[in-house]
Image (cartoon, rainbow, N blue to C red; front, side, top):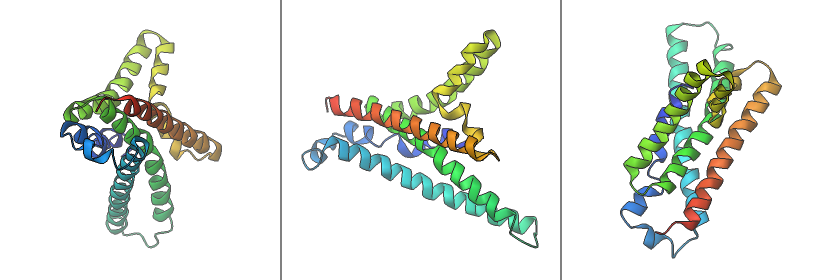
Amino acid sequence: LGLVLPLLLPLGSFAAISGDVQHRSIRYLLPRTTRTALLLGRLFGCLILSWLLITGLLVAIILYLGIVLSLDSWNDLLPWGIRCLGALLILSFPYVSLGVLCSTIFRAPMVALLASVGVAIAVPLIAFSARAAWEPLGQLLYLLPWGYSHQLLSPDGQTVTMATLYCLGHGLVFTLLAHLRFRRADL
């Protein structure tokens, strides 16, 4: 799920702002609220939707594994599921923020979708390809959480804490960039 999640999350956030901009319904929303409140409301709405879907999916996986493996005790499966759920919920924040950022940059929702999925695919591919040519170019992987997302499931608590802070930092940077873009956008 950690590999597929960055490709699926933009499906829930690509039209957060661009859908209203394209249909010009944003003109009716802005007199009633601030741009910051609108952006943060859309971001939190996309996050809550993503978190609910991830939780439902992981509960279904845990139930399926518990039934198929016919465990005598769920004592091993439940802590694993809770740990995976926490990692996926944290990992979703930067990618939802990236989708909202692309939604503020591009007026057409489909262009925002292609941009956010394209960035999520292109950055790791370029980083892995460039690393083969010159090792320092592999650091491009850290433009997105790809470089440390697997560390969210590390057995070391300090490693998990640092990966969590990196994810939150990426999400905040993408949110701030979206805020700056949306605040100055001609709608």
